[in-house]
Every structure is written in structure tokens, then in C-alpha cells.
Image: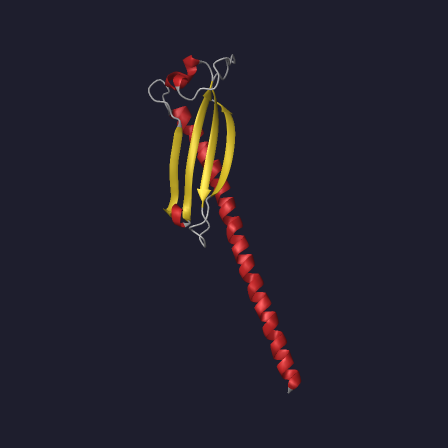
Length: 146
């Protein structure tokens, strides 16, 4: 009788440890998934910014930022907030209307590809279990010749 009670208490203790460990594994997996998803969104928005710059007429309008959000409510931990900043490197004749705004240098003398852009993509997200907590940010910087 006493042996049975000891075995039941021991099994209950092991079950509690297993449940605690599985909860921690689920939380860790969710955090890792969110971070990896944010990295992929940063890469995607970087490529989108490159396409937007190549399709944009810099003589008419200077493309400096691209903003977006994915999900129903990023501020409540249900999605992602994306900001993309674009800076131009090149001579004023190629940079166009962006010459007075976000140009870094006009001393580039490469005839084949005279325009280079620097893209900073920021993806912000919150922990869905703690939406009042801080924002987590993934940053990706890319230098691309156009």
C-alpha cells in the first residue's frame, strides 16, 4: 500500500516536470518561429524596395521609405510592422529628385552602374503572450547597385 502511494507521488512529480518542460519548449519554438518569420519579411521587403526603386522615376518622385504591416494587429502581438528606408549613392544626374534628400555621395564615377542604394529594412514584432512588453526588431541592411 505504501509502495503504491510512493509510486503515484513519484509519477505525479515526473508528470509535472514533463508538462513544465513541454510548455517551455512550446514558448521557445514560438519565439524562434517569430524571429525567423521577421528575418524572412526583412529579406522580402528588401527585394521589394529594390524593385520599387528600379520602377520608380526618380526625376518625378523620390522613394525614401516603404512602410507596411502584416497581420491583424501588430501592436497587440498579432503581426509584424515593417519599415524600409532607402538612401542613394551616385551623381546627382542619376539620383534625380532625391539629390537634396537622402543622397550620401555624388563622387561615384562608375559608368556601368552609376546608382547604388542602401536599404535598411526593420521588422518589429511583439510577443503575443506579452503584448504590453517591448518591441523586438530585426534589422537588415543591403547595398545594391542599380
